[in-house]
Length: 125
Image 1 (tube, helix red, strand yellow):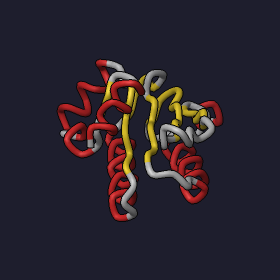
Image 2: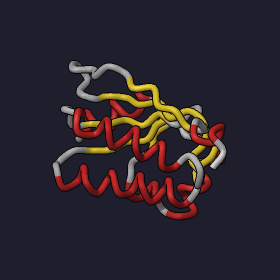
Image 3: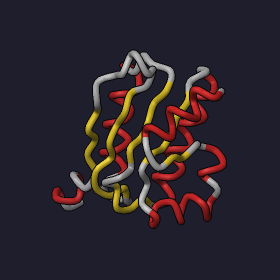
Image 4: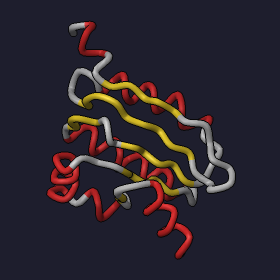
């Protein structure tokens, strides 16, 4: 494995917003065969520390994801569902959204164009 490939994905974990009841993580780079182990490791280190209800993945800077990345996002959603928590996606590029639409991920994980749109929909429930 080329060491340069390991850092194809990075996470920018924001502080929780206690007032609006969510925490945001920006995914930056690409999720592919080489970067998936590092992505999974970073997420698995974070998830036990997550104390909130709503986790928001900001995909604005995510350039690519493969099927393994999509499967892992679905797995996180399923774990959250069992814990009465919610996973959301915001700001996915049209390229990434096309993939989500094709495989139906948007039917499982709610996707929004902005955090404002997301918050409006959370408040309606």
